[in-house]
Image (tube, rainbow, N blue to C red; front, top):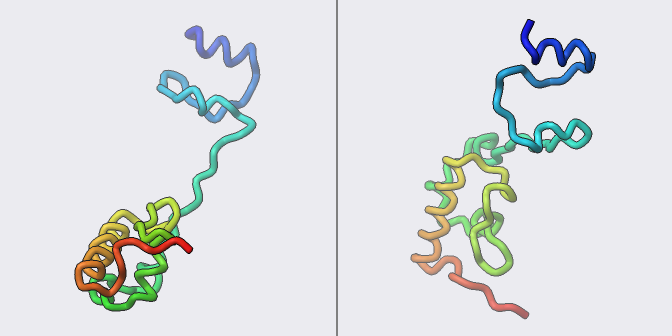
Length: 106
């Protein structure tokens, strides 16, 4: 019996960690485990290909901030593939003049 197993028998605590594994120090905080919300990709759920809807300014404005910047993935909840497509169609819309590069503060 090695030292780790002896320690676990003495402490008698059921931990969700395995011996001989590397962990980040934050993972040992058992009270507050960070919860990551599941990604809900709206475009994949509705089967929308953003590259075909580059003229739809209502769709584009949903993924822009009030200043005209593209929202990050953590706010939109899109997958990496969909986020890249959104950024591509926003840039196309800006180049075509459908949406402005920046918005005026009022």
